[in-house]
Length: 458
Image (cartoon, rainbow, N blue to C red; front, side, top):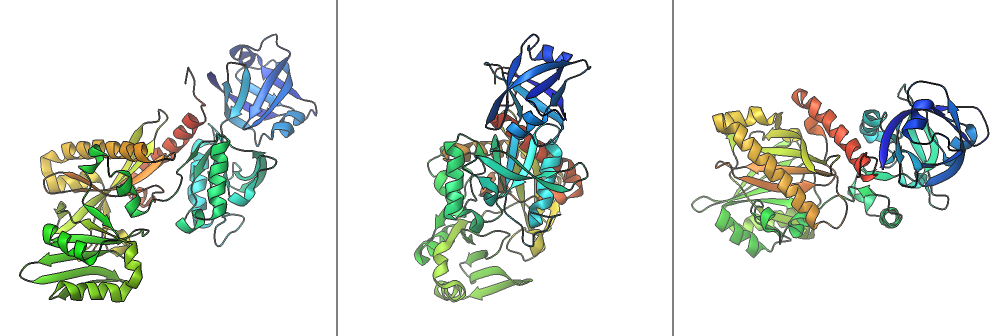
C-alpha cells in the first residue's frame, strides 16, 4: 500500500477518463498505462488514463467518472494505492447522528450540528467527511445521502457510496436502543465497515466488563448494581460514605451521597432543582424509606459505589475528566484533562451544580504542591491502562472514552465512570482550547487508521 495526496478537479467531459498530472502519473507508477481502477467507498470503476502537463499532484475527473463512483467534491484528498494497483480516493468518513430537534437547513443535527461541523472542518483536507442519519442510508443501492459542507460553511446534500468508516455520534440512549439502530450497526459490521463508539455505557456495564481484569480492578471502587438495603447498610458501615447513582444517568442527575456517622446517624445529600439538600436520619430504615418514596421500584436501576476521600481544594472535593482517544497508531492517548471542583455542599462536581472547571495543573499544584507533575503523569498512565482494559473486555470497537477519575489524598488513582460518548464541556475552558482541537485531530487520525489510509505497509 502507498499513500499520496492530490488535488481533485472536475472536468466537463462525459466519458470515463481520468486526467493525471505528470508527477502524479510517475508517483502512482501509471506512466504508459491505458486504464486504471478507481475506487470511492465501495464503488470501483475502470477508467481511461490521460496525462496532463502540470506541476504537482493533480487529478481531473470527467463527469462520467465522478457520477459513476459519486465523488462528492473537489479539493485536496488522499489517494491509496493497493497491491493490485487499485487507486482509492478518500477516505470516505460518515458521522452518524440523527435529525436535530428543532432541525433547520443551517442546523440539520440540532444542538450537535456545531460539533459535527468542527469534525468535518478539522479533516476536510484529509478525507471526505459528511454527517448522516439512519434514514439517509439506502441499503439496496449501498449509498448514503450525506450532509456535506461548502467552503463557506453551508450544508448541502450529496449521495455517496457507503463510507469507509463510521464515527457514531447518535446523541442519546433512546436514539440508539431501537431495533432499527441495532440492525444498522450489525449491517455495517457484516459489510466489514469499521463502526466505532458502538453505544452508550450504563454505569454498571463497565464494572461488569472489568470484573475479572486484575489491572483495572485495583483502580475501581467497590460497586454493586441493584443493591438490597442490607447490602447498602453493610457497605455504609464498612466505607462510611457511598454514592448512589442511576445506572443510565448523566450530568449528575439523581445522585445521592449517603453517609454514616456511628454517633450522629445517617445523612443523605442530593440535588433538588437548583438547591443542594442535606437530610439527617436517626436510623437506616428511615433513610431507605425516603429513597423508596422518591424513586419506588426504579431504585432497582441504581448502583451503589464506595465513597473515596478525594483530594480537596477549600474543603471541596476534586475529580477529573480524562477525554481519551485512539490515535493514528491505534493507541489510547489522553487528548484533554479537565479538573472539576465540587460546589460547596454539592454531591457532584458538575458545573451546572455549582462546580468549577480548572486545568489539572492548577488543581494538582494546590493539592499536591511540588509532587503535582508526578501525580498527573501517574494518572495519565492509569487512564491509558484503564482504556486498554475496557477495550480488551468490550466486544465492539471503541475510539473515544470519557473517564471520570478521582485522586485520593494519598495520590491513589480511582475510576468512577467511563463514558463511550463523552461530552466536550471541558474544552470550553480557555486553557483547554488547544486540547479541544487535538481531540478533533485524533478523531480524524483514527478514521484514517481504520480505513487503512496510511502509507507504508500498514
